[in-house]
Image (cartoon, rainbow, N blue to C red; front, top):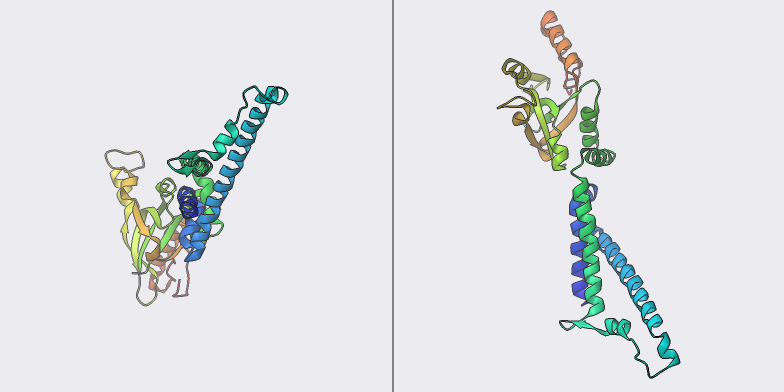
Length: 276
């Protein structure tokens, strides 16, 4: 029975961790026995909650039995109630009723909290709150959150390991999918890093295409959401904020001054450092 109880504890703990995003991210970062202990810890909490609830319920039933047996204490020939003891000694399919009840209570608490967490995830405000909690421990998430909340409408510049560069708006579909293994953006510019200077070379201006075709987030039959790019985190070399107004200014400055002007880096500011 103890082995079955361990399995129940682990499964119940995993159910919650899989629905609670910060715990899920921490679980993915865990390795070896650390991940098992994380799952077991949460499952053990449900086990203790189930035990406490069942103990309280049995004490209430026992108290009711004692009250009903008060006449028996004065007249022993009257019927004596023993249903509290019967529950304790009962069996279900050859398994002790207390054990079955404990397993059931543990599962109910686990499913209840997991479903509640999934329900809360449908609320945009709660997803943003979770995103803020995740951003506290992740520099990449912090940059993405700053872009989402920026009053200056800052974009993000993402350089891939292949030297491909995308500049765009962080798409809130990422919040809906609560996935931190990818970055979802709507691209406005794309290009690559020069092999020697590593400066950004623009290739495609999506923003001009959107403007010419009248494509917005609400346009039909094609909207901006259909241009979104899903970029795996393990393919990203660097990520930073991008100011489009600064980028346009220094791009124009470069055109006016010729090649001697310092090229803009991925944040839209000039730099003489080829590493930018």
